Length: 324
Image (tube, rainbow, N blue to C red; front, side):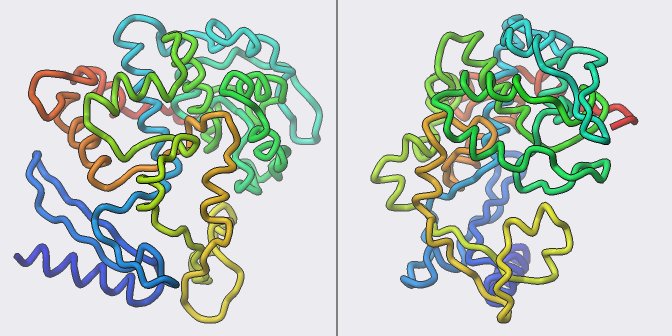
């Protein structure tokens, strides 16, 4: 079809120009698969082509799974958007304050709410690859991600973050960060299950997502199919400082720069599950999940459901205030 020809040509341009090592594409509309194609290399150096069975480190896609898990518990009445996080994680009642413009610590104007975590407006420590905050200040906690990886559990991660000052007053500034990781801990507290077990029982299992897991639970079979991770060295993509962390400074023409610590990076997230960025999955699995959401939460069997349509409608609304 014309659509297939157009997508194939677009994908070949991107892979052929060495801007990306591969593209694994699935396009589904109304439950009908209109396009499925794999282009490029799972491993350039070993000349392993993409097959369609590959798995990928999908990083922040974990946020989608964790958020759906939380909303399942929302449907059961276990929490509300305006609940204080301290209701579920008492340490959050003792946050030391907010780091001010000159490094001073000022009091919180209000507690962190659940809606703040889910909308990246909690003011929590940002990712280490964010060198500059939205208000122009340098990231005051560039080393904290390494310390967080030393924690043994999501409980430890939550306690660690609760000991740090916030970078913004809750609910005032959108700053991409670790809010969803704390949502993952709330899921654990409310369900009595570790996040991996909760996801398996309530989302991954029902949807048949057999190639999706946290990096700590990589099986040999899933790891064998894991595509090599690369950095790009396209100068045009490095204008944005946060993005620069993902690209190489070896500017010798457009090419992919393999990460030598590819598997070690995946395995050394630490013992704590990374609720906001520590998932491996496949295109086939991710299609099952996203199609389910597009069906209003109904599983492919037409019987089971992971969310109600009204909950997905709520998730789809803009919850940011103009101030953010």
